[in-house]
Image 1: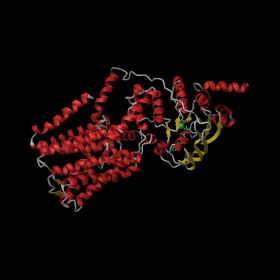
Image 2: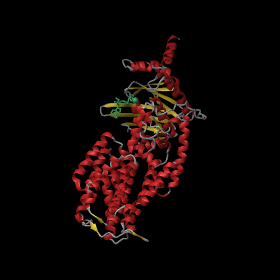
Image 3: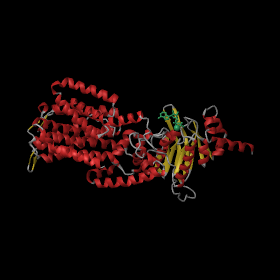
Length: 611
Ligand code: ADP
Ligand code: MG
């Protein structure tokens, strides 16, 4: 912390002293570089942080610059009023560009945003109000009492202050609630939705942020050059901007800034060879994408990894501690129905994955769902948690019809789930994974970022305290700062349960939580699931390991080819003729009865047969 403060202090001093040593042309280049740095931060927020391909940044830049030019020269507004209106206009455009993101996958989004940028360039080149190919000149010098902003030296300080504040704001966003959700969405939009992140709104927010930075860059540009023309906002410049962000490292705002400033300087230096330089940037971008996809900003971490692997040193001297049970609560005597699936059918083209499935889960239950591979168990979870739409039938959760509800709505209503094939947020730390689920606020509270940052920080502190509690409870404290993918599989499974429980659900869906666990880990899992139920959360559990089902569940539902073929206590179900038949000829038969602790089930059955 202290070293970081010192470094910031040194940087601020250097930034303050910089103009003293520079010639008038060099300071001009520096001023341009800072404008590109702002643009790059906006790109980084949309592409690197939020995973939304945005090739319209150069258009946001243009909207900001042209709006100031038009408002000051055509309408005679003052510079600062025009700046305010221009930034707002850019953000409105940002929201409009973001609309396709509501429905579209990211590569299509690249094409759409590029198309919009081309449309904008076309418009400014041909429209009357934008001055056509000649552009608009005669933008007035911005006035500031006692400061002559026509001097590029003094303009530099204006830019430096705007740049410094907006970089801090960007870092603040990235490292608090909003940015964490954006990063979670980038890593795994499905899982983020299941944790309560309102994906469509978050995508729009990503474009809103990009346009804010684009607009600011545009207004600074118009005040600096006081002349705007189409070539500044060309696709060529969009490509350079992309190169800056890719080379610098799109996931790190500081990386984006370094890329932007570095490439602006190099570009200036190579200005006599601009055709070859363009080609050069192209080659460098391709090399970066192939060999260093995280850009320059990712190089230190890669070197550290390499070094640690060389030395063959385990990077974590840590252990998974035992789970501390939740304090139990009084169980309701006769639990009410919490979840009812009524005559649900799910059709995938020719395949009926669920066929007229009905089941009711009561509060306080641990329900098992078993069945051969491909019998529709995961599909059932996907339908319940809002990932799939039913073809027919209804789902009711907590007294509401949730058949058409979105995953985030269900999450906020108290439904949490894990996934058969782990879906942790790969680029987030274990603590951040927990924090994403802990954060129950809606996306619209981001107004706090604009007007009341202390509110954001206070919420952040509360969330972090609770995250520490959860990490302690699940014995994960040693791994709080680790990347989930660096951890053994058993630990990742435990993190997923901890993350789901962080959302304080009323109903927890576990999809094969014991898959890949060793015997000891399975025993721990049994304790965890029991404690979760005793703490008042109802559990539905898909499981292959029949021993686990036998020891945990009071009631089991058996699916086969999408139909419910039996329901009852584990013991009655296992001996039902329909169940035996469904598993016959299926390699799952062995899994049903004879996995690890399945031996107990086997013994039980033998006892039953002989008694
Ligand atoms: P289980 O979890 O019981 O092993 P699933 O629910 O994953 O089974 O799958 C049931 C059937 O539905 C399988 O035949 C699977 O191929 C099919 N299925 C699942 N999801 C999809 C999908 N998104 N598109 C097409 N078919 C699917
Ligand atoms: Mg499955």
